[in-house]
Image (cartoon, rainbow, N blue to C red):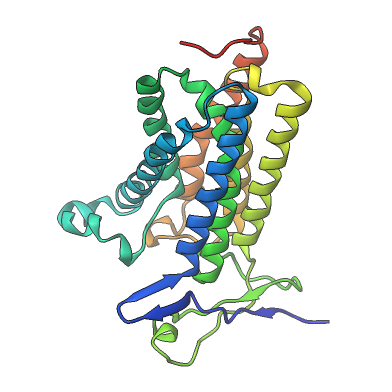
Length: 277
């Protein structure tokens, strides 16, 4: 038996001169690769040319990075970044927000769908399947970065994370937290569950023919689980201390409500048999 897991994983896989490959970046790349293959599969199943997915990938990739970075800067520390706008571009210093990334992808898909002459909900519904594993792997990347973990816990699966991670990367001895909830793992498991639920809905209930149903399920379940897990997660910024709901929860509420609306709307409309503009 053990009282806690001492997590000593190094964020960097290898370094060659100025170049380093980090686990977070690898999880991001692998996640997007899985997402592309899943989108190819569902495009084929719905009679669309899978080659069109590569253009979609570029839109989604740019939308994710730009949206996640701007979301971090303006949701969590707008005063600082408005005073130091050049630092918005310095993504290597860290700071990506999932809510901003989601908004960025949403807007990118609206543009892509208009140019590609596809219904936007056709694309977004299938992304409601493909994006969930990406989100799960990004949380695994957060685990390797020793970040966004939870409150202290006496549960046997609590993790002792390194608090001086930058010094540890430079070769210093690690300083560990008390055992904490590994909320990165909790979220990753929830996102994988969303993936399997949406695959099941697509296969068993023809959810792909009810525009908005898969996207609504994704929004409701992903951000609903995020909302609940935030109760045991440490705040990301000092201004969140003492707030009844932290910024992550506040930003999740519109997605949850929007997801419920999409589900109700989809279930109250007839199935679609052809996906054309």
